[in-house]
Image 1 (cartoon, rainbow, N blue to C red):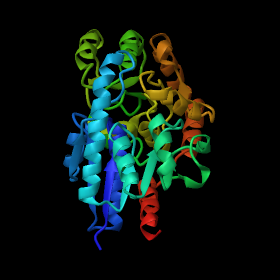
Image 2 (cartoon, rainbow, N blue to C red):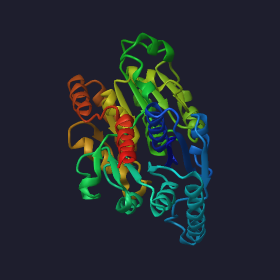
Image 3 (cartoon, one colour):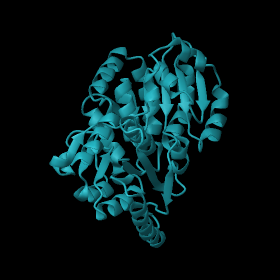
Length: 366
């Protein structure tokens, strides 16, 4: 009997990579399974999922506009249309299990699935659960989480600690490999800072690096600065005066495995997916949580590491003044870097996609 699964959610790489990892893990266990993704029209998943080899259907759903309440009339209409469409998809596809990974599309899809008696699984990536997942939890059969203490938000008997699935290609390269230094044309005898703001970039991190370019230039440190596509022009203009072989400015790092390999210190937002990667790679990190996310969950993610001496956090509003100074102070403190590396590795959850797939497959036997 061919099994069918719906995986819903997306919006950012942090949701899409785990979703595809779960699909791949299910396919490994059940090669003939049918897997359909349901995403939000116009969002990143509508391109990334087909590129990974899976079909996807889009819903006209979007987030609430907290600044312009009138726009939410259209948001509510689209949410209603998305629910109707999600019911049609569930009736037509008849999934055995529906999985939500977060993002706009997961709410209508999982609501529709539960109302048709389809078992649902939630993957909560953050240390602070979002409103949508808290509402969906009532009907969920399993809730796969990445942090301890999530019984604050969900029924304890439904929670399974699995961690967040991450991109497996990041682990194929050894630390400090000569191939990586050659790829970036960097010196293996110098310390390297990797600055990354997610798939789209992070304005504050980029502005902070621009403000600190002179300090970075006067140091003996190498910098890989991934700006994201929206900020590359401003970054390149600002970097012209400080051009050197020690500063690489790029909108996108095609070989993030090689970048991580030589990074002595990482500067990053505090998205759940990024943190999971950093834990598994044992990378010392300065986290600058984005203030522009629901329930300020990035700050909660960062604090979960800071409380274990596994990361340094700088608030978004303080980053311009403090970020580069702190990075240059940390990069020469070998004892502190080693301590952070050891502590962050203790928080790593391995084989997360396989563990989530195992929980999903258990529901087929129930």
